[in-house]
Image (cartoon, rainbow, N blue to C red; front, side, top):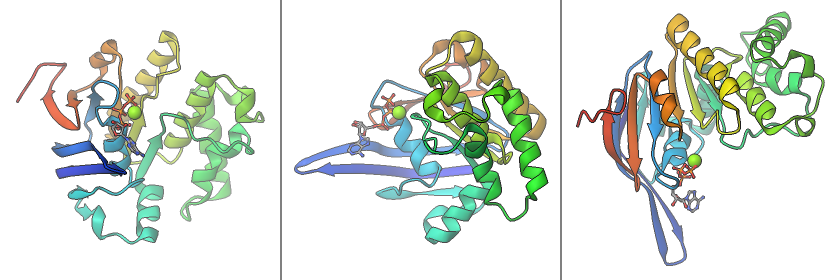
Length: 231
Ligand SMILES: Nc1ncnc2c1ncn2[C@@H]1O[C@H](COP(=O)(O)OP(=O)(O)OP(=O)(O)O)[C@@H](O)[C@H]1O
Ligand SMILES: [Mg+2]
């Protein structure tokens, strides 16, 4: 379970203060497929960054499976990310000088509980699933935006993380590929009880989410199933 208590993230730029997150409290159950929606600038990426241990809140607390993230050292944070979390970035964040295969294998390689045989097999499997195995020796810049996005999804999923955070993973995909990614998410969510927190702009994605949280100006304005407002 993910518990979020009164989370705030304030960016200060000179005299201007932007309240990117302005008091968000939420509980996300294990095995939930949660959609985070809201207009551009509403704080979706900021929230995901905090949950993914990529940035620190100005105040408030996040507890994941009993671990208070604010109490972790930098090293413990890195290990927590490596062993428990997968993250799909809005801008992919692939390593430009590594091939598709290397980008995907990298996160698996860093883990001490994976043999070389295992991580190679896992990397091949996930690339096949995402339809990019034939591009395994290409560099990111030799791929289309949508293909790079799929590589970043494969990289986030290769370690079969307990929790997958995905920031607009379908933003550059056509509807066919978007559906493929959403079906893949649904499959791992159902088969492995993996918790998925996904940011989306697209209304039709709602059908895949168990629950939708809507943000506006850094606050939760709706929280419910398939768009209905529970509170
Ligand atoms: N590094 C930063 N420095 C200053 N302000 C920031 C920074 N990152 C985000 N913001 C501001 O915080 C607010 C929330 O941004 P965020 O990226 O979380 O929005 P978003 O909901 O993900 O939007 P989008 O749908 O466009 O990706 C915005 O007003 C943004 O300008
Ligand atoms: Mg964003």
